[in-house]
Length: 255
Ligand code: FPP
Image (tube, rainbow, N blue to C red; front, side, top):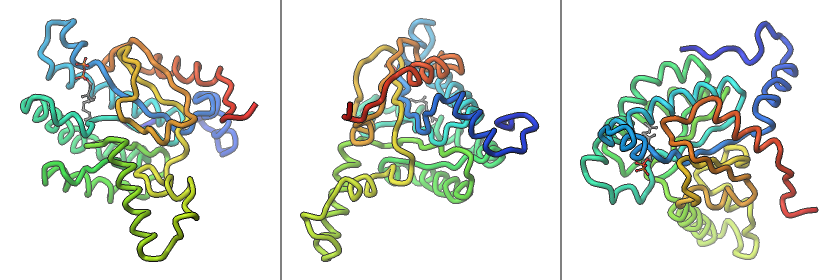
């Protein structure tokens, strides 16, 4: 499915930008902790695997909707570095869904100007998935409508450790003095380096935790928690979250 143009018939790029700002309430980068697939399935007396399958449908829909709205970057927490502790069959199901999703949606990413990005240590996943991801990253690298960043084998503490290691290596090489290290060095060494600052972090399913997701990036982002389970999270729910974001006063520590 091809995304609708941001404003029908518009030839004025400023009008498009203004239209996008209306829909997104100014949020450029939105991240989502997609929680509640298991509970969604349980409520319906279905196997957990079907909850995850419905979760992928919700992913597909929200990626389309976010692209249409004009969100610049959407970061989705698909598999955490702690999710390896789940039963092996569930991990197999999740990896199977990931494979299928990339294979089936890559053409649509390209058609709709979606650039894929992966955050987290994805090289530790199965070889064939790493290959699929690398191909998709390369193929979509010049798309510029929206960046879809999928967090895979991601943990914020691990991401920050890797960033600190990279900075320590730069110090060792004499490229930077320890006392010169600043916030930009750190932001620039994280997996999210070239994404816009995180504006809004959404978590579904009623849990009030960040679960090791984007801990550095969330320093001044707005947080939005909803009881809606991930498979039920749709365009209306995203609009609600963005409206709530738009109504907040962001002070970034100032007055
Ligand atoms: C939380 O549900 C969901 C996850 C483990 C991550 C989200 C995964 C998907 C939406 C499917 C795969 C994603 C892609 C991009 C292909 P849960 O199992 O923790 O739910 P529960 O807390 O209700 O048990």
